[in-house]
Length: 301
Image (cartoon, rainbow, N blue to C red; front, side, top):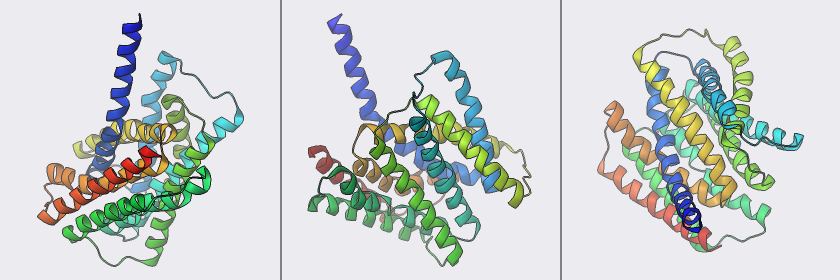
């Protein structure tokens, strides 16, 4: 029996060690698969459909696993608020920013500010102080993101309205990260996912109804896109991100976001045939170094 318990503990430790890498890869892939699908559907319609399908995919697990459910109204409300901040504010406004004319490079740069914002605000919640090496890691990670975006030639002018929407989206994911770390209540991924996607669906379906045609061109690319976004992005990636924030340091988990633009470029090369330059690979290495430094510093704390 002790050997079985020890083996189970080792397996659990291995799973959580691999979880950050699974999260980053699946999250980064979402950009390319979303691009595949958006040629056949409008953004808010796509998000509403994605959230509805995610709820349907999770419902069987709710009855098969019988997960532990929150026992207080405060816990239920915290899950709903996190869902609103990520699914509606972050994803919804980021999609709207790109619809209003902001290109992918500028959007990625704005979203890459999240680890720095979390690092600046996290000490206010935890009472700990950030070290100079941690800030150096954050700066190196951001510099790596800049190299990747500049290497792709995707930066350009964006309408002020789109910039405002992107900044609000950045605020959404930052607040969600800090809020999850602050309230300290862990949620079952199935229950949390269903609540989050019900909130996202309920909010964004009326937005799509009033602002878009809701026309859907059911092509194979759209089916593949939705399958990836629902399973890999919505269920696995978002669930892992929240679980990692609940289990660990918010700054370290947020720093993983630095790896998303470089990895997204590599996935775009594999899926869409987009070019990857030598400068982009240098940027990827710099981002990886920054994430490693942040992980070392927060691990010591």
